[in-house]
Image (cartoon, rainbow, N blue to C red):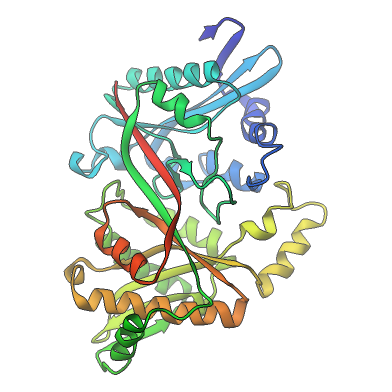
Length: 385
């Protein structure tokens, strides 16, 4: 596809893939809030055989050039797991995605989006949700508010100009995903403290740390709760066993036993909360590479992380308890125990919860009850093809 001097081509070969991966470094060179990802991690995300997402998906990456200069990129992809989901949950038959979107100007952005749409049409898709890069479990949505501070680990960052580009292409918001921030050095309101204390007196409840020596067992427990708890959520796509193993291997270096809790009721695991130290803090100055000396700095940091922010990327309570007082009590207990340890053991002062769907009344109520405030919003857009 050519527009004036703009040429868009499918990514083909190692040189194109390198240009695709490297492009954000030129776009965000002057953005103080962009955190360069580790390039090896990006290659792993994009490469079939390394990222098990590709076992149930197909994709095409595209590059935009003006002359020799790379001025944009986009992915078009179809997750066959998502196609099998009920349409009322956001995905469903005929729904493809675009993602990994970057463009140096509006004309490039428009041409890239049109190219991705045509690829999806040619594959029989009738609707687009995006940006989703690449899976709903990775970096979904376009940042629309909260550009004034860096994202936390596993959250996206993009140019403020992209919202106008995507909306100009005929996209409308499908769902907003929010993150909440809070000062974790402060005790929670008295009502929340009383709820936690009441739970501590309840012999039916046990809140335990994960056991890294039994990592596979506890990962399987968390996955089982997650698939049950999130099963009816908008955008939900089941996680495969190979994706669990892949994610577990990737996250294991930043898994700390006192930051991930499993709640048991009458001896049965019914809820969990996962908290991660913000890996973006040490990564920010590494410019996307661990060599020659950044690997040693990162290993030293991982031995005993000291960080400002802790992120809660995942939390869940089994469906049979959702909307009950017990669900809220378990959530508040896990949050409080992790809050204490995050401050005492890691020097953290700030927490971030999310992402949370804007219509998830239960999680939004919990976030508000502990005096947290929305700090970033991401929008997933939709369009009929």
